[in-house]
Image (cartoon, rainbow, N blue to C red):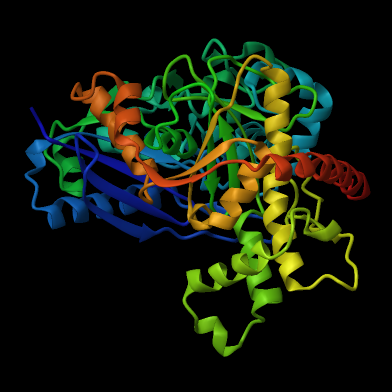
Length: 509
């Protein structure tokens, strides 16, 4: 039996590839930056071929550095950023640049979809109209009809690279089911395209790729593509998954009742359930299909999570252009959270809104950040604590919606990953707000392992994907149990925070 698997993460800022043993042992990894292109204000694009070449270079590096015989690699799969959209022409070449999730030119079409059929879109797709595939595809159709006419299929980065690697024809283009909540035109529960939604917005359903399972074998490496990637010809290529779905799989989020906290630049809270829900009332939750068939990941996220903490570090804690800027990156954060730990829950009446660049869940691109309740007694320790608490309060809002929609589902554990998960102070705040036991996941890389496991399922070297993911994920010995008194206080403060967000939302509308 072949002994190795490769997972590739096609991120916004770069591509990471990793070579694993079947049991999850990391053998080698490599990273290459990918350029973000800013042709005009508000427009953010990437070259689709950059995804392919960066994947080829990093996979080559992994195989070369490991010394592993390419013939021992059972399969490869890709995960990628989820809300942007690319396209191909009749030759499976890019018809347009990749329209990034950071690109906001589709904003008028978000409003159009929301006003015309916001509740219907949310109910059918599991995702309210936001900056994702649906408004972007409508933008290309109506604003760039010449480009739109060249498009044969809209496609995700993971499918573009896998398709190029397998040398597919454009008719064979695909999207796996973990992405389709972001499409604006899918029926989430049946895993098909919604003719009703396509007809309502006059989108050509023929431009949408076929929907497949993540572990479906979409092809094998050819002689030429194998040479590009340093693989053996005939290596199995799986369809792959969205990056959030791959991370959840790699983190072992495969049992209903587990929460998943991605404490990174953006802060994401996802649940795991065996029931589909559609947040038509608040339009805050996005319900993603889990890689594991029959499971769902309702989730929401903050654009200003970890990046807001960095802003506080640069502008409040340590002003720019000081000698302390050269301190160790993480040492500065440790000092900040140590200050926050000296302040009682609620930061003595101070609340912070982290939406510097707009609120995502629910969508309001015009929202901006704020401190509310400043007094003469507040100092930088209060400012830092209020910032940390704001992320927990957003999570509390999301979890409250999940619990209202799934009253019989108990959420009993949260698993945290990312830079923010290293902070014991922040983990304890979140545990107290959510009233859920918090644990930090061991390791730093989960997306490439999730993709690699999908490749293993496709290649037949992993039989039970959920069990394999559960067995390979490891929690640190540090556990953060909720403090009942802190939770009681936070319930009141969290309710006030939600009211403040409603007022700010009204102000910025």
